[in-house]
Image 1 (cartoon, rainbow, N blue to C red):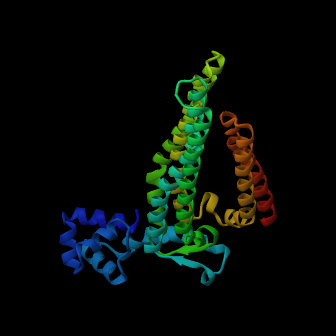
Image 2 (cartoon, rainbow, N blue to C red):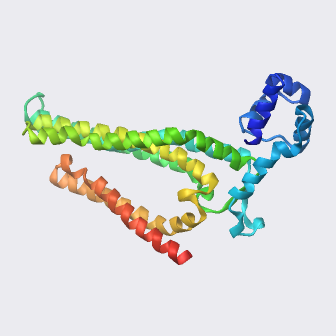
Image 3 (cartoon, one colour):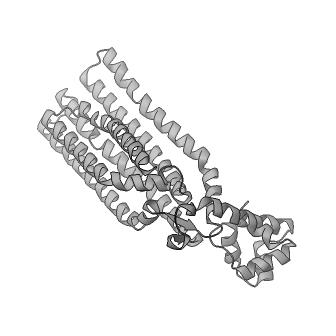
Length: 330
């Protein structure tokens, strides 16, 4: 249990409210609330007062947290004096920024996937005369919505990117944390595990299920409007699945960043630095291929396959590159 949890537990054992404890310590109730939510850490004098009030030792309040910090900083690989120290306030600001950005980026990604849906429907309905508009009008309206949607998504990506750019040092460089930080992050990460697993599972299932209506329509030789509606449904389900996965992955990634685990371990950070340029060029090229192929062939119902193929190839190539870089590092 971290310091925040111990303060809460001992206060409740004594049947004190936050106001009662604040009065005994000579601080505000907001200060006690921040200590118990791990939003800040009491100074050493207040920790001594807390130990006296609770009838426990200062070692009891601090020992577990300090032990976790020594194991969690990963400082053994570099001299302590050269590493940046992350405070509790900085850690909470990092987590909050990531948490706020996650739904915005997830919505922008979904918007990109959904952007051609109206174009598909309008063109199909105009060709089958279900709508009293010409094909040219349908293409014009659909392309307008497509470009506006993509522009809005790009605006969100750029805005969030600027906000998140100041967090890059924590994602790219080694650091150590002040006492209480690693314990607080581990506790939040553990409590988020169920939501993370559920979000990934539902997202993957939605992406798989999205193919079923299109497969059924193709097997039954359904008319073009029905097939187009199935494509639109496919994109809607994929957009929803991607939205869910992006949200939970970003939040989970923020915990891993501060714990320097998984994709944010020191070895992974060194490998990612070398792969950043490749990633940027790769996805710009994939976008250019998608748009060029789509406008050239007008097969928007087919060209979306560029994205899953590009994703699989990127995962394979980057995975091989990471293995090579790790071997070189070892």
